[in-house]
Length: 229
Image (cartoon, rainbow, N blue to C red):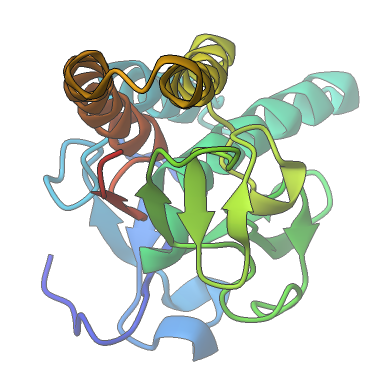
């Protein structure tokens, strides 16, 4: 695909008979659904879709009957499955893409928010951007392990930031912050500089690995920076 990278790229999710249910249009945000005529393969490197999501999208697209649905309950179920796939796609792509989903059951197309689980009629329902896009992982005494402009430090499971990190990663980030607090408390008691230095070096390696995990889970739409302990 060829795009202007100073603006978000646009995708429409709809089942139209192609293997991939993803389509783009040159008109961008002003495009009507009918203008999304350029099919985008799920393997497109610009999307960097995980294998299971790519498979889910293809399976959903190919499951649509050639002549459409004759059963309303089956159509509603199919529409719900497509909406859920589109929501996961939007979360993976983040703010660098604008995702719309065509709801065949209601003959409508809405914007899929990459931060929440809702679909909106307008692209700017939350404001721009609605959630932090540059995340900093940093260890500091009595602070949460994550930072972002407008949020200062925040918990890894803070719903306002819409990170949707896995439970195990959230737990590991909390533990890392706790270990940093404990290391400082120990130093305040014994003033053993050598031991503190060794502990901080170990925690710094742990933090770097955590930042890499955060970046993988957030996907290409958000930037993650590690600033040490």
